[in-house]
Image 1: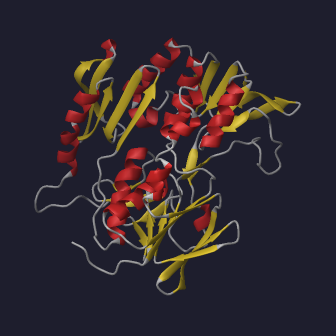
Image 2 (image 1 turned 135 degrees about the vertical axis):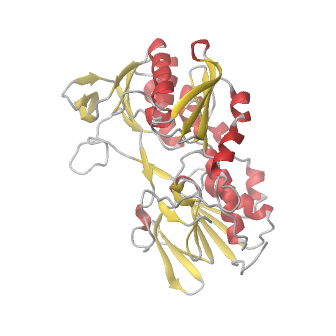
Image 3 (image 1 turned 30 degrees about the horizontal axis):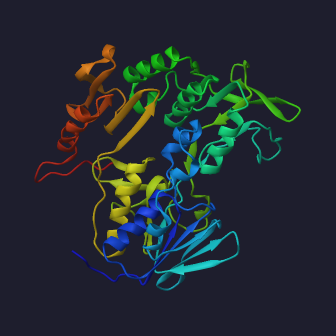
Length: 411
């Protein structure tokens, strides 16, 4: 059902998959107003999952990561303004419009603003640009296409890499760089790689995979800082004082990119907080990694993955058109490391009871079901994509309240 007044113009702040998907969803729904996409990078929209794998390894030329061809972007009849970062949002300066200010000194006024600024890297002490700390050559972040190109160039002339970050991206980079022939050490505060995302049973299997392929795991201890000589990094210092030698260091870790919203008056709490319709305020929506919205079954949620960005964009576009849809997806993410594909539907709750329901761990193909308080919270597949997908309904059944009941409020 369509209701309300559709704004005459929309400004999408962020030109990655979430922003692009919002524009495409608006046009598919018949939106004929003016659409502007503001991006801080100079590149047309591109895909991020290949950055830590195909682009980093050299299997893909960077151009292949582009999300759409030039003619497909032109068909959207949207104005892409690239290379100019948003610096502030004023939601009440002009009645009926919100105003965005940019680093180049421009202002954009629109009847609806979509915040799609994603996440930004969390730097380490000693990285370039940190106040009071010298920049060291050989130290990288990995969030953008330019980051991936620069890291690959450095890896091609190096022999030792230390990855700081034991989550999805860190584990992917460790696997890719090992396959490129580097001696790789993976560090991070968790005792097992991706333990927070996978639980200890499967994280232990992932640790065994990385170890067997040559990755040196130095986990369970936070990184204290970097060391270097003559302006170049030479190692990573762990909390206990030990230094791991390195020619190149890549720091993984991201935080929602909300700093430009600090003067907006909007609620910022591990992202831009939204209601169940992904609406942060009148005329303001959020989508993708930056959005923390109220999931009717899971409470306030924020997901950093491509699938969420595209699915959430459809709900945001519907909201702009006056159709009030609730966004309540089954969370999903996947990762490829070495020759293993891991897929996760739902949430793998801490202290969940884990049962292998298909295959065998020892055979390298299995599906694990995670249950808590008698409800299925998630399923994980290890090289069994079809069998994993078939069990998604079990999670949907748990997330869907019985008629006449509602989910308990969560924050």
